[in-house]
Length: 467
Image (cartoon, rainbow, N blue to C red; front, side, top):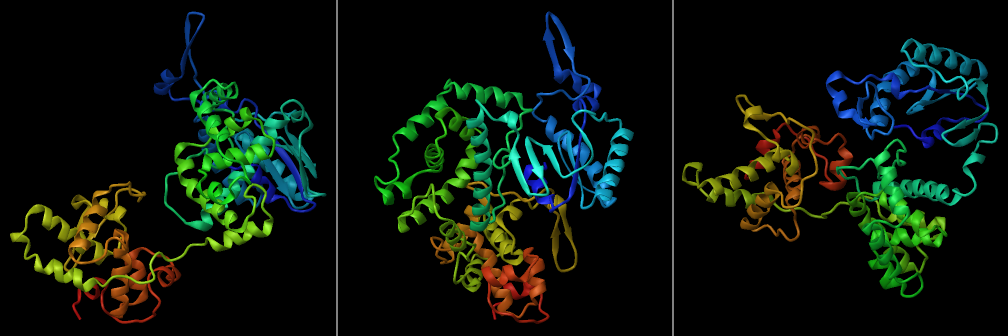
């Protein structure tokens, strides 16, 4: 979903802008007859059900955003610059005429699709200062400021929510620099909280009044955490992510109630994902005796530069001892099911150079055999393996039985071992990339091997060769 940050990236000095607000936008989307029973409610003894998309439904923003994606795609195909946040659209033109054409085409398209444009909330003429998503954007001064009607008694909470967004973006940058992971993401980890989610708003209201046990436990933990300066090395290095965030908000004068609302928007998975990175940041600051809550910009840049992705191993294990061990087990007819499974799994891991997640999804019903190979189709997207995965445990057991130090080399290291063996046997680099699923040779060169050779041998033959 596009956000205010998307709008900021589209602004150019002196450009012209306009906006379209769709009136009763959700009510323009009908609900299927068979699904209306799920949107039923009782009022004064009578049952009613929504026939269109209702406000307050948690999935409504996502559904409406998906519906409008083809609309914006069509407008961009007409060379118009535009973006949308639910029912609000921002139209841009780098000169007045381009903006006028954008307005005309956009309004005509929305009306043809059956949407009603709100005449009072929309700006249907080119301007260089416009209100959008609670901000006033000025393309002449290239500034954005909060709307006046948002200031006042709620200023602290507004500032806290804005700070939360800024902080999450900063964390996202750190996480990207530290490691690229294929993990399950929560929609609430980076994006702003959707006000359309009535359940979440109600939950946060309870938190603001301190009525939940979770809120109380967070406050108690934060109150007992030593402050900066008491023992910087010990405290900074051992603080968990939630405590650190709490202290950061406290240093900026945000109240406990506002902080509880912000932290409650973090799912348990998000907290667990970011905790080691926050701990690294605290250790980095402790070593340099820097306040982690108010660091100089150059310190932050040094930290990001020092935590880029690095190869996990400087060396890899030799495939030959493992092949010798597997050969010593004998033929398949003489092996029990468990030993045969271990042998087959290790051979498949070596000749395919695939992740454990991919091996876990292999299904003989999706297998195709030709004269010299077997080909499997993966039925779904590859996801992160969970702790205790059987495939990884079996590979580790076979490595240990073959004499490979499993304390140093993890099951995933079969990729490096297999591809390195293939490279030494002069397999073409493109064959290795295709087999392992890498799109760039830089990934292989940096993390798996350092030499460049070429030959005509096949990947599997080179890996299993005893020469």
